[in-house]
Length: 491
Image (cartoon, rainbow, N blue to C red; front, side, top):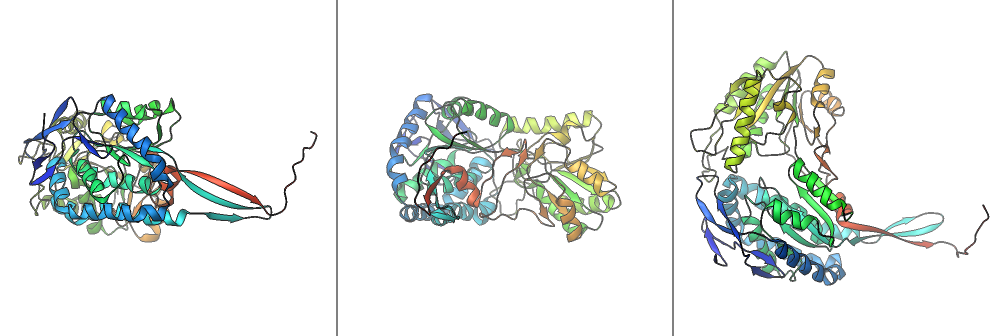
């Protein structure tokens, strides 16, 4: 039996589930290795259907009391939850860097502060949703956002802490209780979240964490009729399986899925700025769903753009994500490495030309060189499918109409980037079918704004009021302005 707590990267973290306010060891476990050097980090409890049943039962029992609190009464508890994340900031940073290969500098300066904000912002925003009023000539309407019930939160391995808190923040603030299923390949920061919630005084059962595989643990979770909502970020095939299981119980799903986003460079773009931003698409080893992985460049500036981008890419530091100088770290798992390299080899076989990269990086076995492929057809696998690694493609266009056709020519529609003279870039961006698109920038996010994709990139929106529309049951209490007299008319 593995210990209740183990040490990883100098931080104490439990390998066990967190159910009904207690650590619970499973009868089976699995080995967890670091993507940095393949070192064994420990053995992690594998959630069985019985473990999932216990977590759902705990969440169901806790729902009545938690949902009965007002948003103002939940606020101090959730603010303490965020504070406890802050108190463990360095542990979260070290664990996710070791566990998922995320840059330690990015964890310190971006992810952990954002995780805290995810909890506090939504807890405070919930206060604005109480008793919204609509007055008409006939009646006075009081619109309530009632907690939906027990929520399943399923997060991916590329950003486990950020995306878990992004979902838990509004779900808990709305008055729901949650079962969090962490990614099998990177579960440690989700486990530490449970400690933060416990220390903050969240009542037992309000937040439960059950670790394990999607095939066993995740499948048992999403098919359960006790769920009121399922919030998932991950791949399209897994989303289809979740939606199929949820359909049997008519459980609403929010699905934030993959991306194959266009990065459009117009002839009037600032090419140096565009090239520097394009090089950012290799961050987190390309394991970012909203990255602009399809470079679409006007043919008149393609040569200059490639030269400028090459200079940026050659300066990228690839190595240990714990080194402050590192800009590109490892790929999460050996299976993902083989998947990425397989895409590159098949693209080469289909006639693609490698402008740079295309091989393993000598730093380590789970490192792949930043890669750019050109001479690719629009219907090529490498253009149409999400690789989720440091692999970009380059296509050129001669007109805005051609750029729009290329941009819209996949089954995905998550994000996008457009560089050019602002009015020109905005006009073109409005024709691109996507959930969001950045103009002369990348990565700007606001918790009040909607986030999500279209087509195979997802169902629903997260952020601001959109998160609460999903995690709540919206109820209209109608009071007539005049005395009401029932009557029936013949038809």
